[in-house]
Image (cartoon, rainbow, N blue to C red; front, side, top):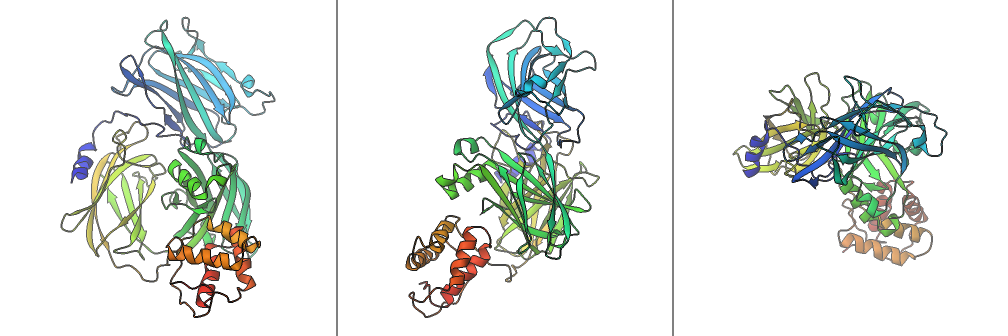
Length: 545
């Protein structure tokens, strides 16, 4: 009940953004740094690009707005002198002094390719009107300062480093320079063709917000798409990353990736959480867009699961595997603000299952609403609250749906009618209230479908055992004992299998060992590997008690 009261009380309020560390960035056109205590205030810097989603080659110029303000009052500090640096992949691209009287600096960025200097910043040029006192470039009327150079001419993560050298007066310098790091990502599209088993040529593009992708492959056995990207898996670096964002665009006319298909996503052969993989059939009439939004928490989980040997890795491998076509239940919720929410879920899930509810937000024209902060409560027909979620950070209310789509996995215990109260707290970094509001919907959960695929769960480190066994480093008996232990302890889960009555001394067929080798190399799927284990169990070669 407490969270339900919060849900209603928060909506419609003006939010002063009391910011937690690293809320935005690494995949968005906006970021806000952690506040610093200064003269009795908690002051911070925000960086916002316009347009917010920039793709290399599509841009003539972009506006970069840098705001210096007190998070307690949401008021700008006046007469600010900024030293702005733009970095990419550890290389300085631009550095210059700027001044703005009202505390919100606007700078035009104009990409220019072809720099031949070893130090790229030497190719950047600055235009504007020097302030007579601070010396920083400033606006005059509608004319704002301009930077041209090797900025946004390549995709990737850009560090906008802002040093506040003066505030409250052009003559006043701060006793100690305040330094802020903000991050924005610029997208780069890379085009590929996949050749199907029927010799079709299907155009596919990967829109990367982090770094160039390479080693693009299509596997005709499972219609999976895979590719690699440079990435530093050192735990100290991983802790600084908020999200890695990749988009895969595939024609809906390609059956394996048609609208309505579900997908399994893997990063470095570890299956990612359902919230990581977002399917967008709405933005393009002819394309399915599948987002990998790998959060920092998920990156750390993957790193921990793979162990210390993974920490020295320099590549992130992505794999997208189509699953079966599903029939979905869905309903709409309309807000007084003209926003619309579509809630849908696989109809094979029912009472007692962990149901992946997909929540999508649209404006009045049917376009996805990006960067939505939302919350919800779910009650049964008697008004008993089953779930309430308004996010985990009281300073930033709501769950963030950066692409306008989110997945919540919820277990509804009983077949019956239920009610959802859905709130939009605001949009974007400053909680724009245009679409804020609260609305309700009624939905019914039916029985679970018993034909839903059974879970297969294999810890990734089992691949090492399979590799050692297939290569002869460990013997058959050691491999069998290891598999017995994993299954008996519930560490390795396989679908129900009828056990045979043989003994563990039976010969293991060579194809099982080949399966293990191919699986350890990523050539065949988990299901293919499990089929070999099932064979060993049904023939009594592995005995499970």
